[in-house]
Length: 395
Image: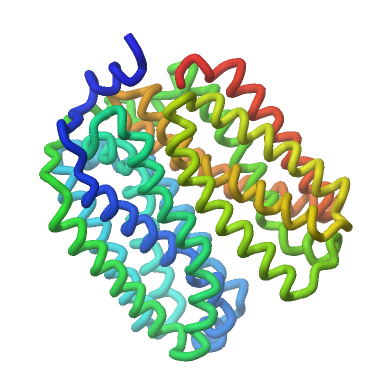
């Protein structure tokens, strides 16, 4: 029996795709990611307005990620008896409430509480997104649907930070969060009118999300996820210091390089929807190998500006395939419990983000940006070998 047939047998797939609902999910992703990273572009005015340091204001991003991690571990089990349509609408309501609380907050404590709500929405939404997408389209169209849903990440990456910074200077950071609440309201209405009723299937494992780690291929898969996302976020965190210090790019060149990363990332997400229909594991291992070679290219020719620009774009394109690729892999590795699988994937990625930032900082102090890039390249190579040798038979 093929993997596609297994997915069709295990999951309630509709006869006709609900593309309106798929695009509503994509807009929800865009709204959540925009809300998550807005403080990055508004850190200074927020800190000045609240009378706190930028370091303290930066905790608004940290607490969101931590809450998202823990929420992803429990969402599938605590909502197992609730219609998935209602659950997703609640997550959109949490986004709206969080944005409004931040916009009206008089102190940092209130903002941190608001960001807890956002973390709950992000962790829960990510946990269920793969399983819900599997119920919106026929099994053979799941990869395409996932690539559409996760294109919201790429669009938010391209638009949210620069636009937030620009508009924040015009209308103030509080009004930016008001606009974010408006995005959440659009997402809520779109989902309300397009998402079908999706009764809970009660397939969450009694042992919880971590019970999936008893499955050998899941352990190897999550190890590869940790290596890939740790490598990426170490790379991405110290990309600007590399571009400024090693490549010696001026401000305009730096902006173009980051724009190239974002555009290529969006293209990679779209490309993944096609590639994973051929082979999920070869897509993931191939992209990891490409990122490893790109890291070596950047370290070796960091003083050649046009090669650096090409390398940054290649990395962005390759990483753009990761959310779609790994979500598709989850849908095939555990089709009978994609919700718990999604929760484990989200938790693993959040852990990798934390490790990547911390380990990248240590390596940066020790060997500079070049050392960070080399370490990222090694992790990508190890991930590619792990996927090819241990994970390939499940995708």
